[in-house]
Image (cartoon, rainbow, N blue to C red):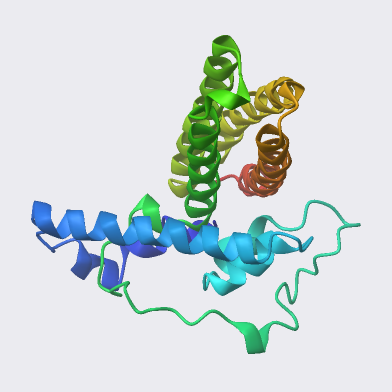
Length: 240
């Protein structure tokens, strides 16, 4: 989530990677491996879902260092996340990678930590929502179903556009796209209040879990916005 993400890959080993000629089979294998990454993220997220520091805990176990994940952290001076040692006290609990990722695989957006976190949480929101509405006992109005799904899709789409802009170093565009994503996210929260109005156990559980995930997405994006604004101001002041 820093200049490393889009500049450092233009030199060194990246030059060798650009010469790789992958077949459709190679890319299918790569995409399947990235799907596994989303599921691994969600498994860790579920494991630490009751912790207030779950986002950073999961990031640590995913193997993301502070240069990739924490450069937009913290949200403010009063936050309880120190800049110097974000993952203090977790040294003995680090996730052991399954070595499915080849270090010579090409860099794509699928390997960007913010993309993985955003895509994984939205994947969970979509899948659990589909299971919820497939049960006629939950009695949700079709208009509510469509409106909520539309908001989820708008939020995810704008967030992905924002992450692409971030990866390319276009910080102001990233902020603009994330503001749109946040607007859609807020609308999603609004529709969740109507979902809970059906007063079934399943809808109540979904609302609780979905709210947690949506607020976590918002926290991630606010960190990114803070980072991007700081970077844009720095470049402006330096005359870049």
